[in-house]
Length: 232
Image 1 (cartoon, rainbow, N blue to C red):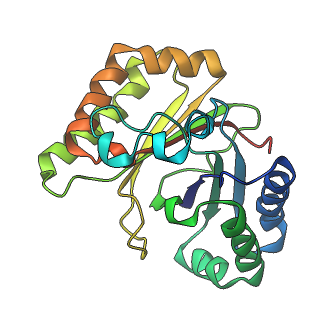
Image 2 (tube, rainbow, N blue to C red):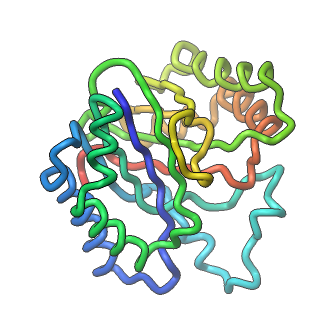
């Protein structure tokens, strides 16, 4: 299955009605874009970028000062689209419905901060209604070696067996995207509920994997979001 994953940040000025319209637009693409095999979307359950919005722009933690800690907030809105093959994704990218929705989203989101990755995974669409889905997108450091990258991938994949609260986890490489803003690695995890997410993020094995990722990625640009699948 070929998946396009995108995470969005609201503009400071975006109101609740505009957010609702944006979400409706994402939902409509499952009907308006014939090549889409499966679609999921939603908003962050852990506060999104609201911690950032509590501070005036000149008092916010800038990305270039967050190398060790990562940014103190999540992204706001999530979209995933599954396709059977590259042709399906190409047809979607040319679809006028996609462009109409994208144009609106640019007006209510910060397009320069939208995080995207196109990646392959095996099996049917990873969408199970009502379960909790967390994605994290990473950019490799320019000096990261192939060995470091392999160690990071393996550390996250091994969590599928070592963390009891984790229902399913896969990783994917962004090797097919054509945009210079595309991310390099995605960690895609599914849980039964939010308590399981919290147990996962507190588990020593997750913290070890995260430490490896911090050492090999541009941690200050990591994009993360947790949402309830197939719920809007």
